[in-house]
Amino acid sequence: MNITLSQKERSLLEDAKSHEEACIKKYDTYAGMANDPQLKQIFTVHSQSERTHLNSINTLLSGTIPQMNGQNQNSNQNMNFNNTSNTQNIQSNFSDKDLCSDILMTEKYVSGTYDTAIFEFRDTNVRDVLNHIQKEEQKHGEAIFKYMESKNLYTVQ
Image (cartoon, rainbow, N blue to C red; front, side, top):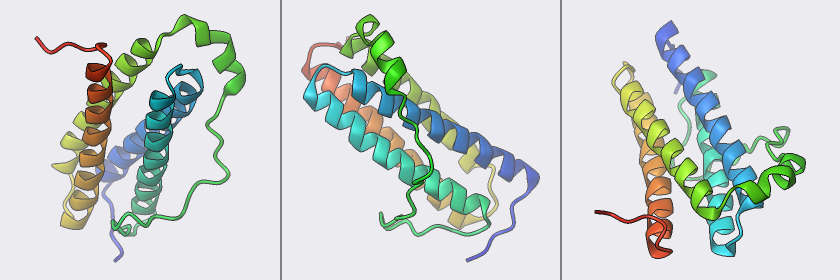
């Protein structure tokens, strides 16, 4: 299904694209910095999910509604978000708690931007795609929260 985007809709998608790219960079970098193998795995899985989100946003920007059955196979092979040389230089400065706190804050922000964007789109199918991505962002945040809580890194008062 083809869609025509308004300038505002296109701008919101460009913002979402930059947010997804930032999430990929963070998750890839933090996977290399994390000490706990369980946390490394969480970061790696979330990075893969963020790549799927980026693919969906790029598909929307091209004027097409993406398939939302979890089968987005168009990975960005030419995009390399790993920066292992910088990871080694700053690794000792951040604890797993620091990494989790930062990525949880990032997920809260990104989820909020999707919430706003959803209300700005005319096409229900686009809203559904953005809603799907937002729910996954919330699941990422929930997984980080649960990890932190299980390791006594986050206390709900």
